[in-house]
Image: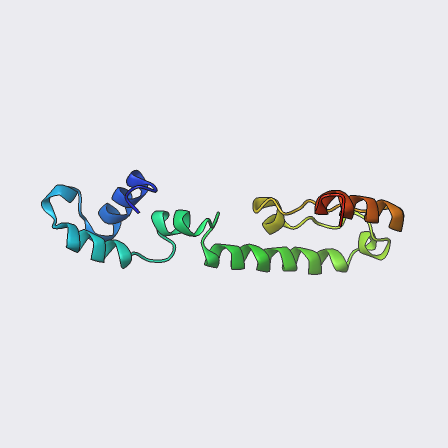
Length: 118
């Protein structure tokens, strides 16, 4: 944790345990307290590679569904226009969709991804 992001760990220790001088606390105690930090602490989010805490992602997902349900009752929805984009996908940068006009285009792209000879 210390090597990954010292500042994040120091902030978490100060916020959670009111430890402002880590040199005054035994290393074994710091290690134990660091492991006990909540899952949405700065350092644990960084360790897991998560962009957001799980609870926040769930709330944004619920908001996406509510926006879609509201849109589904509009005239635009009847004509399949102006569908709301997923906020969660935009935040997580997963809103990249590739489409193909023909099966041949798909096969060509698949071969390129797989290395060409597969």
